[in-house]
Length: 235
Image (cartoon, rainbow, N blue to C red; front, side, top):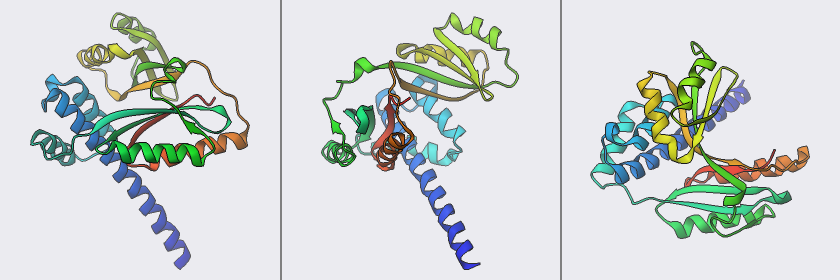
């Protein structure tokens, strides 16, 4: 009985830690967006998108408002968005996106994770040729006519639209993020999540054991508080 309780307590602690990290990540993103474009979501496309994502992940409204207030009053540190490129084990290309108030700390940690995995960190931007930057919108498929939606959204920059497990994915050029977001809002289409992603142009096929090595490295990156996203070209 005691062992079961401890196991359950450990699971709850791990879940709470994951949620806390996610909310911290949103707090940083809100801070960067507010300082770049102001605290009014109606006039700040990026902030509006982050708030939407945070609400979808059940971030409390008061925490969102508090993050906006801190950034507006300049109580927050100045976070820089920096990307790091490198190769993990088995030649897998990896791009690590960060938001940091201490680049010296962050670059040292990212380099350490690469080195300890048997990989190596390269020059920032050196892997740009291996990834396409895309805007991705996830929409609840229920109640939507996929063909009709596709016809509507092509005029607003949609390049590719597909459905998988009850979710419609809309891909646009990186630069068309705001345009598509506004179009979906005007159409009263509920967006589950929107993001700027790096889609690999080619992928690396690995064995199950090799894939495990990459998964472990990605988890190390994601456990770092400065890391906001990790992209790779593992199939």
